[in-house]
Image (cartoon, rainbow, N blue to C red):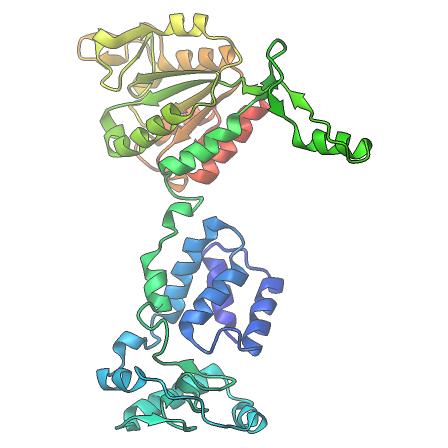
Amino acid sequence: MFTDFLYLLRSCGMKTGLNEWNSLMEALRLNLNGAGLTEFYYLARAVLVKREADYDRFDQAFLEYFKDVKTIEELPKELLEWLSRAHEQTPYDKEEVDARFRGLDLEQIRRMLSERLKEQKEAHHGGSRWVGTGGTSPFGHSGYSPKGIRVGGPGRNRSALQVAEQRNYRDFRDDRVLQIRQFQMALRKLRLLSCREDGPKTELNVEKTIEKTCDRGGQLELVLERPRKNQTRLLLLMDSGGSMWMYAELCNRLFQAVNQASHFKDLKIFYFHNCFYEYLFTAPSCSWKEKIATEWVFHNLKPEYKVILVGDASMAPSELLYRGGSLDYFHSNERAGIDWLEELCRRFPGVIWLNPIEEKRWDYAYGARTIRLIRDRVPMFPLTAAGLEAGIRQLKKS
């Protein structure tokens, strides 16, 4: 049952295994989904989705697979009115009812429902054939049926398709452009904790306290240690202006996330346009009134700084490869941009480049040549949750 739904989930990027799928089939056999599409949505999501990044993929696959299923909103108003007042469950023989539905699959039940909807002209309750309540019909609610389709009843104002269509988890994907939350969570992984040698011991070590207390036969012994401080130093260089205007909001989110982070021992942020040369800038406007010598930055920052460059790496080849490539209409650089980039890598072992352009477009987007040249010198990652995490792993190796 639903085997093509399994393959659709996999085609959407979910790594749904046979163990999870068999668990879902067993849950359906036990009727744990309450014989309704909405209940099936929540049941399948609980069983099949193993990480938050897959919630949105599941919603998309669910919409695609069940888009033609008739939902409550499409049913006649008269029918919904009949079902709005549930009758009490009438007496029934469970074995007889179970035997009646043995061998029926979901497609057969759907066809039966379609026929009933065409034939039914009035309210029916407590029976075994029509759409109603309190009976043993496979259609309706508040009755008993081992298989069926819930119609009306609790939860009808928020159907599974409505929930999936809202795509409330699209920001949890690991292949989409990041929001502030994802930036903050990923940046925390850059932490390098160590304790100060001279500070007071004010932080409780719970595990060692439990161990020492057990060693003393239950007599409490508190173990205090010096608090650990993050020793990570970060240099953030951001491309600003030109083709980066379309990513201005994204860069603003990154800027906010970095500035709100309180776990860096030191943080330096500078800006450049396309590629940096003899000057960096202290503001995203890249105004000459706010410039700072690149050599000064290189000489005054220690090699243990982790360096993250953010930019689309798209520019005219002359801006990257040749001396005299224009910084603006009134100034030309004395060294090629590629030389400055290589010197950055020599001075700082930990350097990565985050590119907001989709990775699949790097080979044919505008500036593909300069993207390739920069990738040959600096590890480049897409500006997505997965890309940033991979980049941070690269920085921690350095």
